[in-house]
Image 1 (cartoon, rainbow, N blue to C red):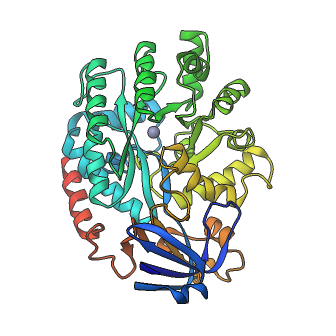
Image 2: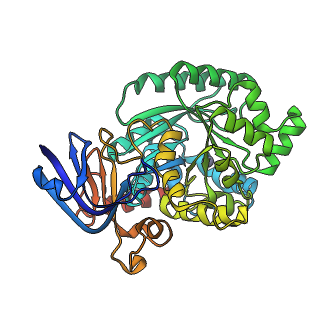
Image 3: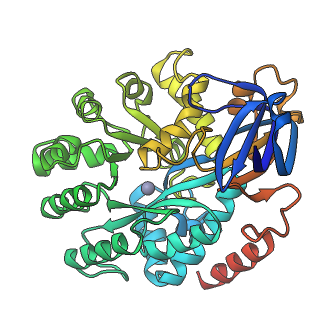
Length: 436
Ligand SMILES: [Zn+2]
């Protein structure tokens, strides 16, 4: 049997089956897909155009970022130490008002894509304005993405009325139908920015396209109190009445659900995108993630934007989620290593509608893979590669990133990959820095 690329690695964590670390394994890639997974001895019988020896590395599926606002990479570092409302009103909204355009969306997303690749993220779930330009940036960087058809209850450079937002949504679904790298979700921004009528249209659109619904929900206590005041119901109760709480929902943040709301999510088979850095930096609170996982809710990990994080590093985010989740649960046995690695890969892929193609090292899935060098100061001696990947490794130890079997980033390629270019990114960022 012949493969295009044969990756011979010391360890691999396939994510499916869960709780598994393979040792001295070979992964064969043909036509962009994983075609063989076998013992290195058995791999002697294979021929390959290229053989990659990774004797001190662990190979995992590409990391999945379950929540991002990629163009906001241009706004990195703005307005530290402000409350959410001050931050939005005095920093973020004025800057967006001044600069918002398709060019802003594309070039900002390009900067985000470069950082994501360097962090081992091969697929992201994005919500912002001008999603077709964001998708184009991710495609140009050989990444996969789900981008939102945004619905928000105020006018923007992209759309003036609710009808306009739904027109943009229809165009987006049409444009990307059957695309191998871009999938579309419906993205009602949040319960407090979208009215009941628009939310009912969101449900119908999502049903028509069998598309995920990507929405910030229960992010702050203020949001919950306002919902009680205006609707006499908590946000998830209101959304359940409207039909939003279903197996296609990606409920982002979900910091303040009560037991009834969590039961609604669990019974519906909804997913949660947990973004601990953003919740901590904006002091939104502490999400009961462990409880949600115990109730059977699929939890994924997201970075949110670099304006509230301020980095796109899923490995670091997952480590934080594990640590924080243990403390919130007051239980050191909570948030187990393999559950967390699953959340950062297959859990994320399932949440954002990509579970059939990515998120695990399985035959037939896309060869979106990441190798991490563990024979490094941070991670020696390597007695437990899964634990050390989660708790000790740093994104700087990522040696290779492949998407569809193509090497997009490697320690040798760093300066001249067609998909990753440090110098032109710096140049691009400086242009926007001057415009701010
Ligand atoms: Zn967000």
